[in-house]
Image (tube, rainbow, N blue to C red; front, side, top):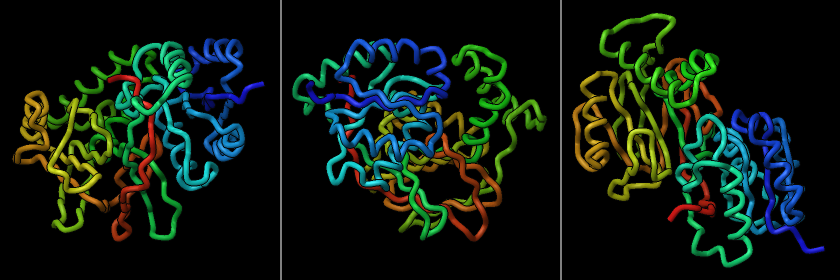
Length: 323
């Protein structure tokens, strides 16, 4: 029997998998060259990757939301299961949020994406391999780093939690849920309303970028990423000051409006805007009292005097489906 060329790591509890997993299981049953491993909790991913490493896959495909991808990237980085040469990672479009899959060109039906990856594995993968920088997050210098690609904080994290806790339970389509969330955010910011049915007002934060002074205030949006695509911009490129891209938009309607216009014009991050901070760095620290930070689905809380530190992690190879 030939060695499996593809390993597929699935999280059945990912929101998108509730509807799709039976189709994926049927597909894998018809393709014995796919080694399919399912986990239900993040704690099981270490054992899963230890087992997957034994079959030496040509591609490791992750089937879950951004939280599942983040947990797998953390284990690949810290666990050393694949030695110094982990297989390239691919991500199926799935889950409620799929910023990582979007960045890698994986959109639409996950079965179609899986079929494409099976076809690619039969030939030279090099034209489809891209290197991606990763973020290593530490809550203290001695802690094991958590690895991810997109961190949202301040008003962005509050709004993401509001959408998850208040809007998604309504059972509406994702697109409608995101529009309602955006409208609720605009109502709060423009009218200055505070109500339990609206996203909360963000807490003050201090963001320090090495070699630069701290940025302090309340931010409608705080994001740190290594991705080429962000929430407000199809492409975010600066001048190459570091692998970590920081975007912080002050909690004022005018600042958010300027950022949106700059994004539409393709100038976000390329010109100075009042109330909009864009930095590229090799180290970022964030502190404040009880503000939420979300790194690819995993939540952290800031404290005064105990900054959360972000640094680049070792780059990893990914399979990009789109040109």
